[in-house]
Amino acid sequence: MTEVEATQALGPLAETDELLLGEEHLREGDPLPKRDQVEPYLAALLQTEHLNLLVGSGLTTGLARLAKVEGGADMSAQLPINDPDLKDRLEQQAKASAAASGRGDTPNVEDRLRVAITAAEGLRHVGDDRAQVIEAAISEALDSLSTSVAASEAAIATKADSVVGGDLTLRGVLMTFLGAFAGRAPTRDRLQVFTTNYDRVIEWGAELAGFRIVDRFVGTLEPVFRSSRLEVDYHYSPPGSVRDPRHLDGVFRLTKLHGSLDWKWDSPNRRVVRTNLPFGGTGGPDPLQLLIYPNAAKDVETTFYPYAELFRDFSAALCRPHSALITYGYGFGDDHINRVIRDMLTIPSTHLLIISYSDPSGRIQRFVEDHQRLGQISLMLGPRMAGLLNLVDRWLPWPSAEFLLQRRAQIYRERQVQLGEPAGDSAHLAENNTSGEGADG
Image (cartoon, rainbow, N blue to C red; front, top):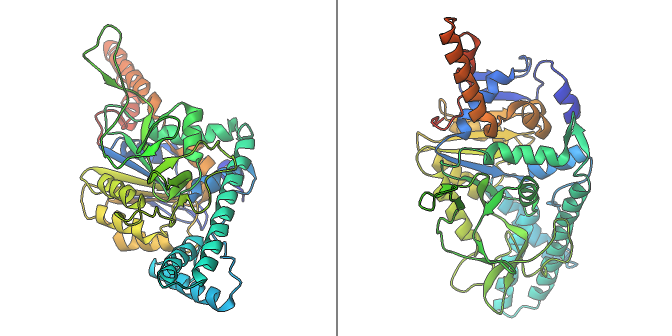
């Protein structure tokens, strides 16, 4: 069943579907819940004091699936090394690295690159010529990886105006997805978006929707990564006032935990910069200068710079009281990320909502079983609950319209009281509108 077919079907939940929202726990065979059973819960969660969104490869894959194109980085790529013995030794260590991360014994390209980079550096220190062989393979693998990511961006961009379900276009799906999170009340702490993706799908969607992004880069022609954690924001002054600045709507913070297709290490000036690379464009940084995890800046004063700085932001945003994390398309395959999420869940007032299209490896279910506490973990699993089109079209709230909905409910109540009638449906409407500015989830 395709996602569009799953959206149109109103039968019971399938084997791959599961919903866990507070006391609501639905599995295979249970009827598909109504919007009123899901949307108010999500609306309240989106107005939590500190809201964080972790986006994995599932967002890019979901867009590519809707557009009917190939999408995502080639994470199964091999290192092109002709020496069989050397290649076998590196592969064995990559398997061990994958197993240590809890992903079984099937390594991905990040595992292979991490082992190869470490091996090349060690061999270089002892004057072993095999370092050059490994470095050439690393360069070729990074070039192939960046090419596949750019091709995925280009394929999605060409389908931006394609209708993917009902009257929704592909760009409309992405804009609505981001808007559901970024449209929260601006007086609250800004939405913090984290992603493990190398592509620029989130940045592209923000530009399409007119959202503004705040990140660690400063500058216009060649933005530079800054270690300062100064809380820069966007404000405006209402007409007739210069002493009462207000927060601008549609602003969120973005942290790319594994780097980006347009980040590079500027060796002469010893800094990380963002290059001017169009969405879906080619000709990015030189492969050995490209900063996508685990390729790190060769800075003698830091270890794995800039990733260490980015993960400090991640842990600081999550591990604090009244913080909520929503994951979309993240398969819990990165133990360094899972560790921070585990630490977050030791704080009783935090909440985790996992939204995932599938769980083929069972890592999500194991994480939920190991860390589930009453009311602290929620789950939306399977195409019917977490398919990108289903999520946007059926389940996600519309925070930008929430004020009007609440105001309408208030007017209904006032008019019925004036007419001497019972509140009726307006009271029920007010109860469901839980995502107002005063709700803490």
